[in-house]
Image 1 (cartoon, rainbow, N blue to C red):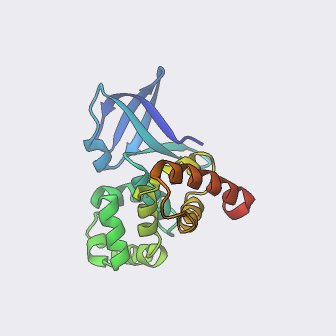
Image 2 (image 1 turned 90 degrees about the vertical axis):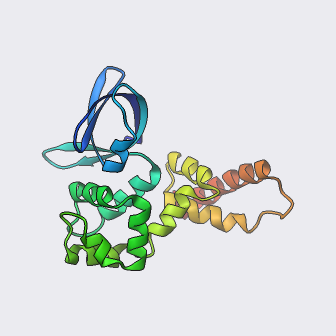
Image 3 (image 1 turned 135 degrees about the vertical axis):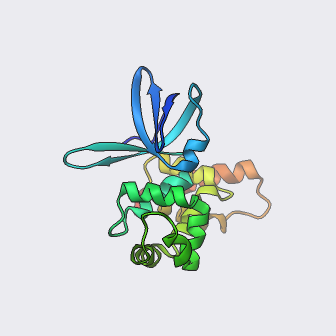
Length: 197
């Protein structure tokens, strides 16, 4: 599975970009927010998601982990495919989308072109209470530890849960660097026991 691509942006289209990685050029479908941060000729690292069907494979690119997390959660909703998920994230940035889902804001969701009220309701019912916690895990004070654990192959949500449970067990007088090292070691032990590996 691909996690990211780092290379030179060679072309930008309406909803796609081309990136040259070591002489191989990839086409990525990206959100409008991610497109705004790209410039032809610039060197970029984009997080990616590979969508595989029987007759095709397509890469999707993201500016940050929050955007990719929300995208993958949207794919779990019946009736939402990758193309619609990109349109949804282009219509509302990931953090605003998370807030709209959490607040049950059907009006904001259904204002996105291509997203009707019924699908908006399905998204809210399926994802309410899940996206905000994932967003916090991606960008919280221990987000780097959670990301490192996810890069090692552990489930991101399980890693976030493990880190949260261990924070309360740390001594109050521990310094930040020692705390981070201890959290990392103990989370690996906890997750390796089957809590989320």
